[in-house]
Length: 305
Image (cartoon, rainbow, N blue to C red):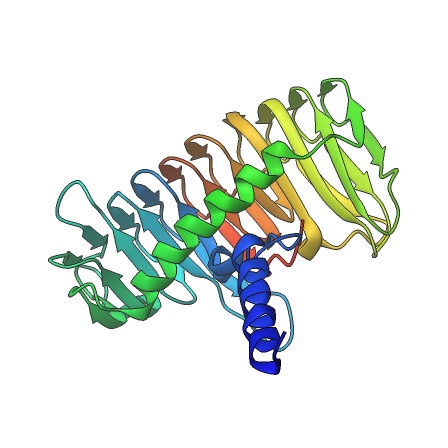
């Protein structure tokens, strides 16, 4: 065979192999979704008064966006987003509403970055409110990010659901002020922990303990219910950047409950006062309704499956 023919054959084989192997084979991560501190991935977003979403606890600071997919968004009085708010509504005119207060004596900026919508959107500014910038033409880079995040989150979640469990635990029910530790059994690798229903009464704490080199996917196959001041806490060096908690649904989430790491919920998220996500993100496959003082301290999730 001539040199030209060998070259053509080599190129053809290389092209076939490249076309046959998915670009993300063996490397599935959250992609663009990791830019977002909060995503309402299938409905409206309402954040009550005094929210604080997207600030970071890492250095150098990396601030988190808020995204609303196929819904409208409303921020209560003195609700602050540290970065951008992107809103896509494919069913009707996308609307962002910023609640104000006639008693304000100076203008506040609830959204420090850009408020953006897909084409034809409307932004309703309450008394004394503004965004750092606005774009309702649909061409914002943050709208592009949200479109990508919607797709990337779906791909990541599909991978999460398909994984085989490496550790299985019966349903966990903790009475008031009780504690329980779940010890990671896969060190230096990915541990997929399946738990049935998780019910934490007032002031109860559920700990997940492991090493800094561990990667955790915690699948709550039933409902996650948290009483007042109940907590899910990572200890022993477990890295919240590489922990992903996947809950089928939320039950009652009472005042002051908190979760370490990234929490994904396969349905709507209805949250009471002072709910906190510490060092991660909140992704909900429906609408999000949060009472006053929601706090999400953002850390980009780096889990690779």
